[in-house]
Length: 173
Image (cartoon, rainbow, N blue to C red; front, top):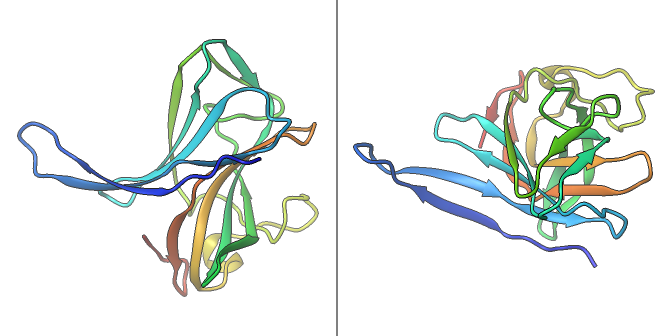
């Protein structure tokens, strides 16, 4: 059975600074075949930046050979639906099929993401051309998730952050 998460609103206090609020969406699910104990998190910082966190929660080292995606799903009264848009993220500090992400036991990796720099498609097949956020995503409110899927079908998914896409590709959180 998948691990269910919640959306947390945390106050971050730093000495000499005013309180800053950070929204965090922690790991929501993993498939039964997802044997490495990995937790995915998306966090929105105070300046609108999104950070992806990949954490090995086991004591053993792991190597993830997988594809990393950002997804956008419509939000309804019943909650988020299946993703409407997929964007593959190819960054050296996130899992990739050709370059596994290696994490020691209890290690966490944090990677800043720019939602405007990835190409969005209606599926993850690679058969449809990707487009910028402004050209490829209809305006509206979505749930943003981080998903990691390997070639054997195992998957990990973060909790969702609510984002609003406006005409022209503008984003608000």
